[in-house]
Image (tube, rainbow, N blue to C red; front, side):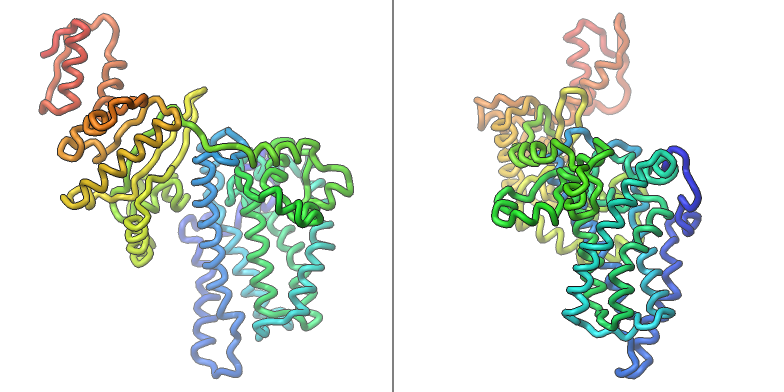
Length: 477
């Protein structure tokens, strides 16, 4: 939220909460009904394709978010080391509001604006005109509006909401108050309306323009650099036509530089390019993967747990204990494909990273589900994957690797002892979850305690606590 919220900060459908998509229902139903009942000549293909376009946008954002979080967790080419905090996660949960707004704008335009319906599938002149109008009026006006948005009056009421995310990720690109989105959509409508009025509009020019904006927005808000130097060496002029994640990241840290939308040429022309842009770009490209101090090796649980990972759906990842969502059931075919892909891929992957002062921690996951651990034929493969992860962590200089959940079963690998026997020269300390639980309990027992009573079944954790207390000279009952 902005420091001093102004008018039209909230979206009109905010009070609807999770039911906000109902505002699109009448338009979706009407478009589908019209396409089905009308004859082939009177059908409006564009009106029917608005919903698939919106769904494609959601998928586009999701793929970029998953890819960005995975790459940022690994660390190679990362720009900023600061992790994303919980406040940023909370205020970015409404990233899909602008997709609803986009749908409403297209449905209303299709119904009430002349020339906005029954569009042809493709027209080259409309596509070229859209490109020229974006590079000219849209980028130019946006540059000056963006500079004005950093004036104290507008910034405190609106634009500070976007800049509260210092460490950016793809969905950060669309986190603005409703009033700002009205301005942006007005700008982006310049090419759309011009093509409509000149009779050069097509479904390809409209859909392509929306996907171009999404692609550039998502790419520019990643917290890692991936556009190679040779790209700009072969095509020097593209330096002024395509911004990079480093270019825009500096705008979120320095605030008063790099104002351009997607084309930095206006910053170069008006002298607002940050002087450290090139140095940050080169240093980010040279950055290697992180060498974590601690690695926690976990695995997937249910078939749907992949959606609850930080790499999965942001809304589910931020609320891991939330009840099962209805739309997860509808994704069962995709879930099944994910399960098969995990079986084929078979490699450990980085889920997330955390930093506690100078201590770097990473969570790695095996692409295995709970059901795999109950299959005798899977045990050898699971042990091999765990051992490969341990050796990889050892090679990176990791100090401690903890085996979480079923990765440390007694029947599976003797609580991790199997790997130590096989690799006696390991430098990394391999511990299981029970060891960490014992350490936590020991640290909360007050100093000066002389006697401790343990209740319940004598589990592995309880036995470890009892042994550790006895070694300290504390009487255990």
